[in-house]
Image 1 (cartoon, rainbow, N blue to C red):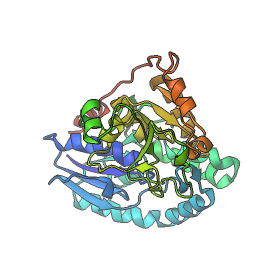
Image 2 (image 1 turned 45 degrees about the horizontal axis):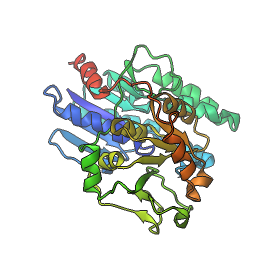
Image 3 (image 1 turned 90 degrees about the horizontal axis):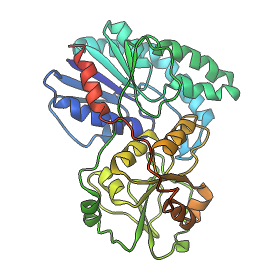
Image 4 (image 1 turned 90 degrees about the vertical axis):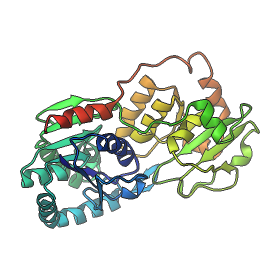
Length: 355
């Protein structure tokens, strides 16, 4: 099988989880080639003779000012520009797929590759926990453009051969066939004890990892002078993060840092939630602007994670002690429901049906 794997460039969550699937697929004999198509190919930290990388934008997603705020006006402008290029893009990628003898298209989570599969005459599989028609429909309250676009995208999604639905799912379009699969996400290579030793963490200090993905904390200065001596903030790869009062370790595999931390402080996103679940690390979460997936991720936090809400104001002023006390109480440590895992294996089994 020669697979065309289109991955959304919105944030790091799509590429991080689909990167885990790619690693698993590359070990399978029935996979001849994987053509990874995304604007986030730089996130992939491994090479393989079967893996072909193509930097190309196949969806817009949402334009963000930072991790916590959305730029709706710029999003609309980007979408209009993308719509104008779709006819040429469809022609070029149809030619690419035929020249490379692509036999199946897998998309996380754009609808455009589904249209491409129809044009090429091959099956397509949707992968994700939300679709962009659902996300954009939320903004029709501000601008009818998003409502009209949402209706168009919903039709496009409906032509997928099947859909593999991840946990933390939002309402979905009427797919012809769909299956709920297990959690997909990067796992730590080290145990918690070994990870803490690797990063030099001591037992007298509480380490809070600040995880704000691709968009960072630009424009915010954390008042680290307010922290007690037994709390240390940690960050790695956070755009706009300050140096003062923040520990920035050397990291070769980010999930090892997630498992080493006592807590992760983040805005809820699929990628970091999956990594925290595998690492068994509690979460302090804050708002992320008017992004409707947030409501469904918060519901997942309440069901499956030791977690607590913390306002952005308290994060900026470094007021963590009260929420940490709660998470060490009986209520805060109550066991949560378990998730089905090994979504990577589920994807492999579904792709085998097309060989």
